[in-house]
Image (cartoon, each protein chain N blue to C red):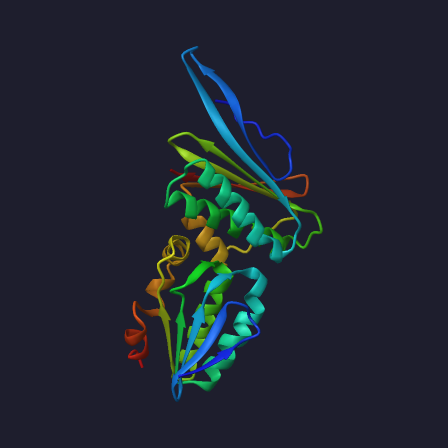
Length: 119
Length: 145
């Protein structure tokens, strides 16, 4: 499994198999990193059949991050690929997802194995 | 109980809110911080508010909801007000009832009705009010404990 650091702090990109990529989101992600996060997700969706965004270790996400997820999911659907969210347990991250209603729209998984099997 | 904000910077305090029928004194705890209109300051807002809520013993999920609501409102003010004026964030605990949150900034920054931030913000509190006066917008949210 290859790993690549991005210009974004607290995000690591892993390549578990050809055509599949896992974006491990750590730390806090908000309006301050909205543009960089979108550029990363957009480029990964363009180049892969499966993109998993793992927020298991994220400490905070806001509506700008959620908006990026929705746009990345739309882009993946448009090119016929799969976008899956791997859910975390931090209370405030769970609250943001629950309040936003995004879990009714995005495919999501509770484990890495389940997320990688979603293609 | 009359609630009144007092201007201060990055502070929290306890004030006596008087008595009800001479029998019961209620203490209201208050938080206020002023942040520059820069997205990079949002993390420090979250940490300051989280620290105060922790100190006041506000339980989950209210604590997470208050921080999320304050962040969303302040982020919206920063993103859409297009102002160089600071954003003022105030919070006050009504014991055993709620945390009352107010985010105030110049400009009209609450008109993006369909944005993800507004949807998220609107889903958190039990009551959400917007007041516009003197070219300022103040958003007030009541998050139940």
